[in-house]
Image: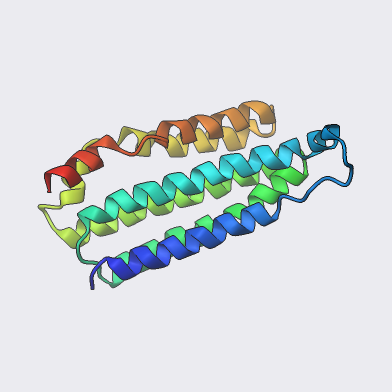
Length: 192
């Protein structure tokens, strides 16, 4: 099967995830600008989660340029990724509504870790499907960002019980690491 149906389905699911997250942004009850201040934690958690979903969409888009054909294993690996991403709106809302309390902030970190692990599983599934001359394997090389991210998420989860601001900064740091699409993949797409 070609990649088009998989990427179109993924695009739709990610669009729904973003829509669900934005629907959690409720207007304040007052009419003064100062009333917006109470929504700051909800808005900050939304922005961070939107950034994460955008990063996954962007990287997914680039990766699947190197995957002309998908099999059942790749389809299921992609569904596994989408499952974990679909939980991000819930953890985003919980963390924001509770002003970055320790347990919701830790659970949010776990909800970021799970799709990161699913992403690695999807990468390996694609590489195994492509065989020993995998275009994706050549493009990835040593995936330092991919190897480092889970450890930063786990550190953030642990730090949530010590200092939620530091945990949030770690989650933001990982997002900023991934903000620019993987240049190795872009270069490989351009070559192919």
